[in-house]
Length: 57
Image (cartoon, rainbow, N blue to C red; front, side, top):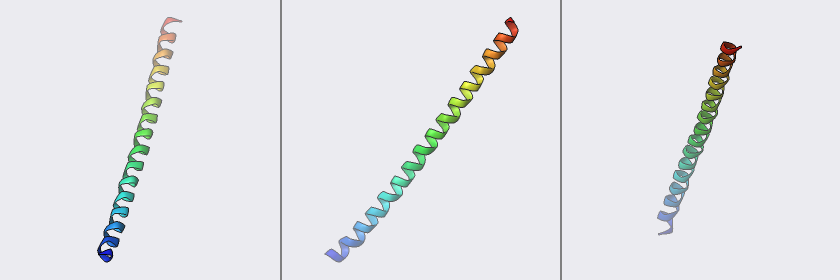
């Protein structure tokens, strides 16, 4: 019995590590895209504000 449970346990650990790695990469990519989105929105607002100020003054 123990000889069967050890490989299963190792396989389970390696699967959990893969899942954690995928989850970590996914989290990083979401944070990256949020950062890029924030940058683009901020830039668009800045450009819009500049255009608005330039047209009025």
